[in-house]
Image (tube, rainbow, N blue to C red; front, side):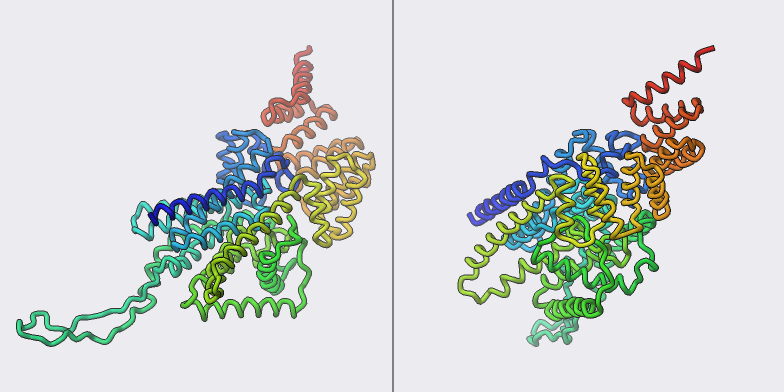
Length: 593
């Protein structure tokens, strides 16, 4: 009877988690792609747009693109295009599907490890509905977040299954899920550390047993009535317990190390140098970010898709943050034996944030909501087990916990629903960014790009100029401003901005394309062809690069070379009518005597 009631509660919790998550995030089905990363990841990526092909699969396994190597994520995007085309709603719903599955897996795994049904459900509900996780779900390009977390959960589940009955097949399955997760996003490099934490609690594999030895005679006399004497109890050496657990993690650590090497190579061009951001400042910002994430977890307001880089922080702020972190850490170590969930949850949070805390700074953002997708689970665990412990002497503890938990979940759903609505298009997303942050040049640039799509050119140019006032060396702002000036016929000013953009970022394929187009309008065909060849070299799969080069070559009278480029355009996009028309024209000319 009791078992049947537990099963009913289990199913009931799963259904509630699914409904609450779908209600909170369901509006994403009507959202378009946004112009931050979605362009590079999906809509303008020729390999993705072709769906699952041999060439695409080969590219996903070998290419370093967008400063990442994550073949499983690329394959996931290709599969979406294969099944649904470029319908953004379907891509968003796929993210939501993974988020729901991750929530259910987290609940099931925690419950299996701890046998604490409602505490596990509370952690899963916080994970599902916290506003910090909106970015990972509502942003199509963050498929890598929810997908890697899916393999994170599968790895944990397989590991728990393995610890219940150690077996090579179960161990191999755990390792396989881990490897797939690393190929979805290298954030999983810290998972071996988390497995060791779980060995301590709740799996209780740190068993420092007492060694006992029987001191009685091996062949006692039949009439001997003496009680058996035992040697003094001697505790087992901790290393004897820890070493097998560490040894067990060696293959995982090796995979993490390999993934780290590949990631450093893939992100080398996006990584800020120590000259740009000294290591001492990185450490200070890391301390501050740890505390800032906790603050956003407790009070999730002013959330943005991009947080501008931190200025050099005052020493008192860094010291205060460091003191808070050290103080909490010492308390968790001191009380770790009595309250193991506290230390496990805290070190889960600290450890899993290390790859993205800014010690190796990739990109310019000071922090990102998506970085908390896995780390914040540790704090949820500490809260779910710690708060009932603090209230254990209260007379009506269960009622207080039930009511307060319900209210908290309702509030989180409401805030998250509102945050999801900010993602309904690029204009609302980046206007919200500007409303809740200061000096956000990225938001100005991307809002400007969306305003261009809406036909509001002058407003867009104003935002590009504001971005350059904040950050004069922003290549994207120069490039976009140059594009609009070129459309207005202000060729010389446009070329000036293209030149500046390439000084700060010499690998911008679109800038070379537009620079070449600008030069061609001035009749400088040799220079134009040189820049367009650079565009083709940087973006061999970019249709516009080949198309513009083909057009300029045709204008310059180099029809044979133009034909080769038009053929390449048609290889990449067989439906291109302009390329077909020009190629047929060239072929007809070649047939004439």
